[in-house]
Length: 164
Image 1 (tube, rainbow, N blue to C red):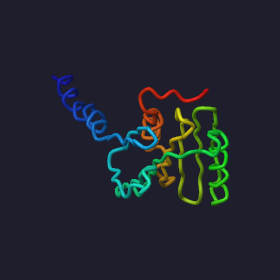
Image 2 (image 1 turned 180 degrees about the vertical axis):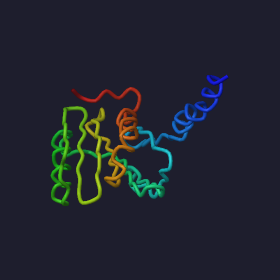
Image 3 (image 1 turned 45 degrees about the horizontal axis):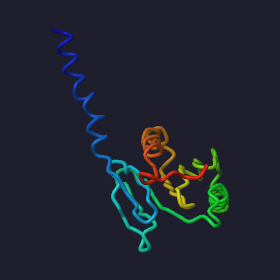
């Protein structure tokens, strides 16, 4: 009987992550040909007039998310990422992590009570797709799973093979 009660007590907790996963929704950008999963609670604020991407906001925790595509000058993905890291530094962010490869990059920074995480991927036509999530430092660990899922989900359109 005790095991049955424990099992019944745990069922709602076990069901919650699956329900939360169902609240994610895809964002697909036809102009650049990329997709990414948008976390639960994030509402679209605006879509770029030129079709580059969109911005999202979470009223629950004040986090902001932007997703966008870009055409790096000369199609050089690594240079584009390096320049974006430099822009963040010039804007007062302390870069705390960066990893840049020919086909993907991740970097993050901190400033006062805020942190950000950016993920980028090279796309097949020399363009690139990015997402940048900014949130309060106090929420650092609660966004780990969100970032992992978004980084795994940021992908080029089917059939696109980015250059090596």
